[in-house]
Image 1: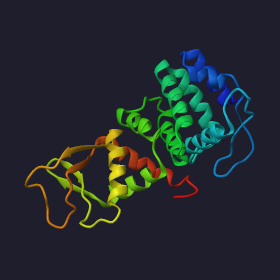
Image 2: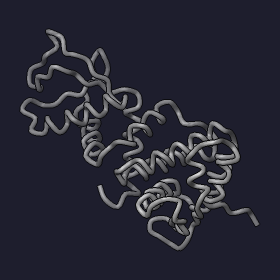
Image 3: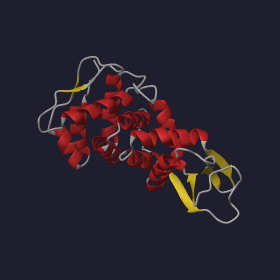
Length: 235
């Protein structure tokens, strides 16, 4: 019979492969996969008092939902165990992702983290540069940021000689909220910005002093938002 692993085993593997404070937190308690919870068969359980708060347990449970999306959770946990043991670099990726999950505040983010991690388990590949940027950005994302970002990417991108630019229609009612999301994207390297120059203004579009352009990580974030919508119970 094949060996079955849970997050306690994965935490112990992390501690063997590398020295990271997150591994000590994970190792200090017992995390198991118990029961049947929709939409995946499993939930984080057996939490020790010195491990994580109930809220952080909820967060890791949603990461597991993303990790197991479309697959058996037991299989995914076994693959995660092998992934952690494959190299110190991959152990660091997983430890950092657990830490980012605990730090994040938007439930949709936890599922996206699980989906991104799941893409690398079978192939034992490391995260791409764009994925690492996205994971860091999501740590401080809000539900509004994700909703507005998706709408921007699907409705307000226009090809230009300098790349795909975000263009809002004239008299756009939600400009304040969407500009805030654009600024969040720039801060987190999802978009890039530059000052508009004379002669760039166009008829029928909103006159803005700063132009926002799509950066490479933007498509990675959008793809994962769309993939995660199948797992989210809302949005």
